Image (cartoon, rainbow, N blue to C red; front, side, top):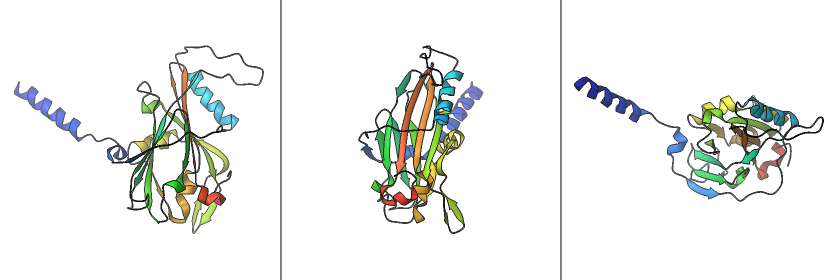
Length: 227
């Protein structure tokens, strides 16, 4: 009995030492972002990768719609809410506050110049895609379509270029386990790092759950491909 009790105490201590992502434990100024009009356009090749997620799903609750020759089938789709967290690493860089931005189902736009100050410093960015408890974080796929021009600052090359997209899933999952993505405002490096369209997708019982987020900065349009 004593040994068993000791094991239970050790288990509780180990459980108590586990910590979640640091961005989850911060205090935030909560902001509800108004929906934006207009559609988000993504390359056909990226869309095919998203459709492939559905095709690989084991459970199919609805057969794909019939399609014309050369046209991709449209799966049953649900638009989901999204939350973005901006966390100061250097005080004042986000005007002295951490910010949690809530987007309605389907996502929206984040204009960096609304939240960053004219100071040099760093901050973290974390994303929370919320299709419900049915989709564990490990099943969420993240794609990124860059909207930042390639440029040189000192010896550094910034920006991923125009019409460039890639799968961010592994980097995203790792970053969200810890502090999020670290960016810096010096020479608008944060704009070059973040500007673009993020597509979050998860397949639950054959149904595609999605949200998109466009990050831009209207004060530095020359650094972006599409204004």
